[in-house]
Image 1: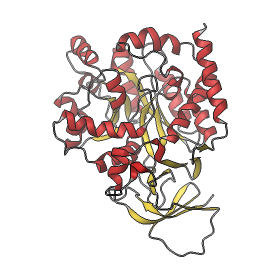
Image 2 (image 1 turned 90 degrees about the vertical axis):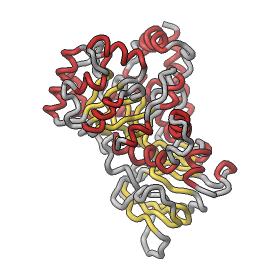
Image 3 (image 1 turned 180 degrees about the vertical axis):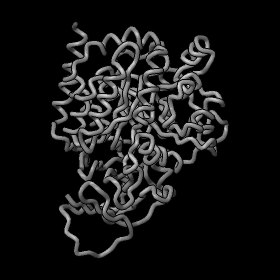
Image 4 (image 1 turned 135 degrees about the vertical axis):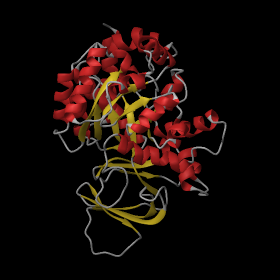
Length: 424
């Protein structure tokens, strides 16, 4: 399907966050043209008048656990370890593959309303989660989560190969849950596998202070240094959260060409702390943004994440001038794609994937237009997402979903699943 967007403002993110008046064409799931308005005899299946609204690359949710939608608001306001071991883990043990399929669809719907066109998902029953993304037309990168309590490196390798050859919307990165859930022999096996596959490795890293302190007590090293001692990140990779990093940890991350994904709302809600994003950027580390899962956030809202990412760094550094809005938009739209291995989704350059969103500027919170990009980051909200397109197909427009299933069915399934679990 070929689509023409015209009479609007375009920000391709090719040249930072510059906005220009123009139009954009898509066809075959790719961007065909992005530039000034022009006359043409080209034929399109649909022509969309942007009416002055803003077209952007879609946001990339670079760390989440989609199917945890069933635990949204189920066990809040508890200490982290109590929340995890007494509430989350027992309920997750009741999940079936079919549950994950339906719960993932609920998350995808919420992603679309927030302008998210791709997610980096770490969870259980990933084949069913992949089927949900394919059926909805959504782009998902899966991350392995093997640990000493479940799964194996052999299974991880099998899933890695399967997902990377499954569908154009699906890919995978090699990974494991976290240092503190993996015993040394398993970590050694993961590192050997990564070397054999020549694959980057991703995991939760230094999310909470107790995690770091316990690793120091057991190994004499921080989690980052300990994992690096296995030559774990020879081919790069990334860390989710990375709240409690030493200067030496940041040096390792830079030297290994690793990505960091910050999840500010989750880190605040679980009292984990504030990640040193500004320091990482100053060292030349590429930082992306994630929501984490809907059990610890609880909202899969990228506008909130963008605002918190910049505002918390201003407070942490005691400097209101740090973390410009344009930097945040780059992290949300472009750097997230790079962190996930989606090099064809970072900008809206010709030949790149047609994963885009339209921001409604004709709303009170977007006026006046002193600086459109700052409006998006500092005052934008989900109400401003007018359209979301993935791989050239419109999945969400003007409050309506086009994902092959009615919202009411998805909601009913989610409530049925949690109802069953709470009764057993």
